[in-house]
Image (cartoon, rainbow, N blue to C red; front, side):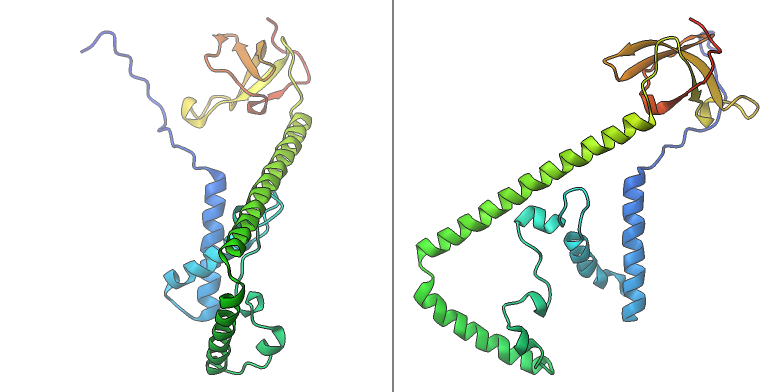
Length: 227
C-alpha cells in the first residue's frame, strides 16, 4: 500500500518501574499489614497517621537524622514520653481521667507562667532559635548527602573501571529488540570517550546511535573486535 513503509515485528516494549519507589510502596504495605494484624483492625486507613509518623521519625542513613529532624531541627514529639509532663507523674497515671486531670492542671500552670514570662521579645527570641536550628539541620543533612554521593561514586568507580578506546565490550540487548534465537549480548568496541563519562560504541554493523555510561556494558578480557 505504501512503498516507503517498513513493518518491523517484535515484542512489545514494557516500561520498567522505578525500583526505589516500588520498594518504598512494599515497605508501607508491610507496615499497614502489620498494624492491622497487631491492632485487629480491618480499617487500613486508620493506620496511615501512625505509619506517616513512623516514616518521618525513622533514622535516615543518608542525612544522618530523621526527615522530621532535618526539616524542623528537633526530634518528633510523640506520646507522653516526649510531652512536658514529668516522668514520675506519667508512671502514676492509671486511666484517661487521670491524664485529663494532669493536662488541665498543666494548662493552668503554663497559663500563669506565660502571663509573667512570655513577652514579645521572649517569643521572638524563641522563634529565632528554632529557625536557626532548622537551618543548621538542613545544612548538616545536605553535607551528609554530599558525603554519601562521594562514597557511592567511589564504589561505582571501583566496580566499573574506565574503558579504553579500542577495548572490546559486551552490551546487553533489550528483550524487545531481539528474537528468541539471537544472542543476549552484543560484542562491540569503544570508539570514542566523551567528557570522561560517556562512551560511543561500535560493532561490525557500525556505530550505535546512543551514548553509553560505564555501568551499561561489561569489559572483555580479550580483544575480539578491532577498529
